[in-house]
Length: 485
Image (cartoon, rainbow, N blue to C red; front, side):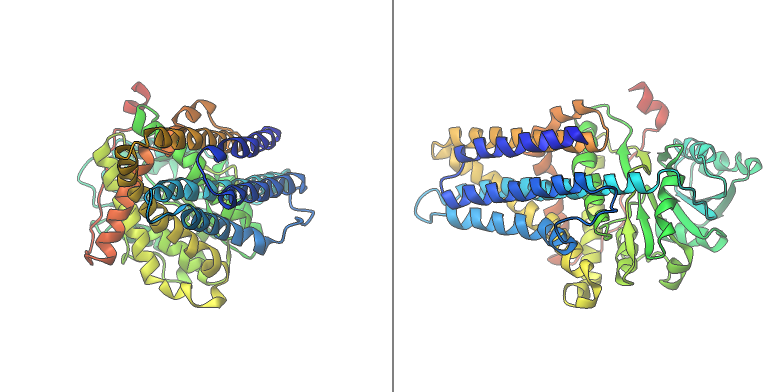
């Protein structure tokens, strides 16, 4: 964590030195400076907080609002102050796109560091082992199901039952899973009805106090169940999100996803965990109280992202959802562009469906931080940043045609350096391979815009075309093929 502090100071100085090369207005420069100083103060306050036993100097409400308000206001100021209708009006679009992403990620890091420090110290030397039911929904997962079950059997947890639900597979999934019945694994089979249906079916047979859901193409580390159950010692905790990592780092696409999972998805999850309002309990690894899920009717099949939908329903109860640092699941990421497109289109369409379904959270105050933080943050990430990102593409072309190639290259260089700094901080917090930082520039140009286009298409499909999307499935290679790669 000391390295995180050093890298944050480096990021602060890098911002002070580099931002003047791409902005023209002094007020815009000061917007960046104030944002960086605020993030630096947050991080220092977080690191000197002794595992949560001392109250932080900055109120938690301010922490929550900062993740949305600071980047939103700064981005708006960038656009307004840099905009000139009569000359180079397209430049602020590109600058605003980079500013929104950089400042949002910057606000996450201090809270993620605080969460890591608090959770790691709070579990030291403490034992808590309520009965756990692990449910593994599986559809045509013959390449992964055996490895998934083996990892669960090896998990160092004294009171667990493993329930595999074969959702009408047409391959050898059921056959392979059935081999583990003699080792105490319960294997169920039902007609194909979708992931939500399989999870609900598995819960009918579950006896554990805590339900842990694991995707069939995911592998848990040996102490993950201990970590993911620990937050339930607090009666206010209704759900827990795991940290998902990419296991197949074989090409440009999967390595970019590996960095994205660390620097954006997991860091955002840890940051919101500090405030008790994790955005999404991910499908590869999540946990919740069985009694609470039964009260809410379990998983719904109305949306494509049943994990996000259940998370919102749990948050609506006023409960806390956390993400402990030691709960990890390694999963196979799409290795081909076509498969990534299918996966992300389903994610973004499903997220938009959930936002519409639970739109009352935008106006009902009693939902607390779900209304004040989670949903505004989802709108910022799912709509605002992708819109700016896609708009930045024609803006860059216009700038270059107008003779501004140097400005475009300067902008790319400045934010690539800043993104590298942020990536190194996130990689240190997560204790990940720092070599992934090489792919930080693609989070500024290239991979970022690919995701922005898919996100924008998904929102357009749901909000404008009113499509009823179907579940899309990416092709899996399996662990053996991944290792050989």
